[in-house]
Image (cartoon, rainbow, N blue to C red):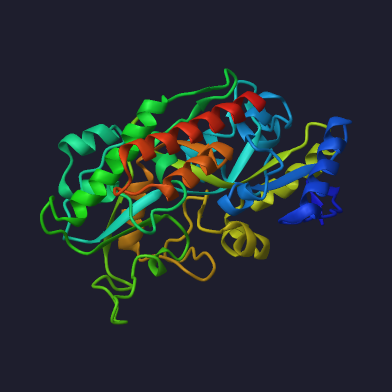
Length: 374
């Protein structure tokens, strides 16, 4: 193939997912990068299972600050396929430093809750905070704020918002606040389940993803479907963070090795991956990168712009757009978000306060240690 008249030949290496083979491959690539070599372009996953398997860059934010990636601004201006003004702005901003755009988010997710249209009064605003929802929010927003069985690995990190000042190696929340927020979520879930908010219509919370309707039409215990049905018009409410607005989590992203001798050819790969056509229909993209997430191209998933042969009705896409407009910030899935996920998986409203504090203290200590080693 050719890009801007430049013939391109690409060799693709897929890293082993787990085990000693992965560790050996990571060490080899890191050694190559340190010696001024390494791959020209990286296509990386921050999906929780991959984080558990040790990512190439445990903290993409720190890798950007360390100058591991090429600044892409001039290349983006000459892009042939991506449409920059159609990529979710707050999500793309996460890949930018003071030096310029270094990483290009490909897919992301954020927690949402769906209600059948007309059965929930949702007043959304990107200025809303978690504390305002708890104090003043409608029963529907409180139900959307409470965790559910499908709340996803990004729930607690989405609630806390920006987690760290990476250059300063400091967490942006205290251990006491971590305990407080977990208690608030557990109490909120218990109040919802005990109908302290009153009777609520059928709803389902989940991390936003392609084919989302398969996540919010669960079967009842007797095998029949719950009241929400595929094709029903719905409304969507996001999870609001303590810092305000909705925080998205980037699941997959790409970047160019600053050591590359072929920046134009490397950028061609990213340019194509961010095109609407490839994000919607590309085999690599749909099979391996759209795991539990949505594409950064904002036109996709509406009628006539199917992703993996799936789309929403115009009515439901408008509801999705309203929820997406609540995104005010985004961060990469990293070792901190994974630690928070593992902590929250251990928590229950039945836990003794001292046990919760002990678990949170250990997680907080580990997160501080990770930052210091980053």
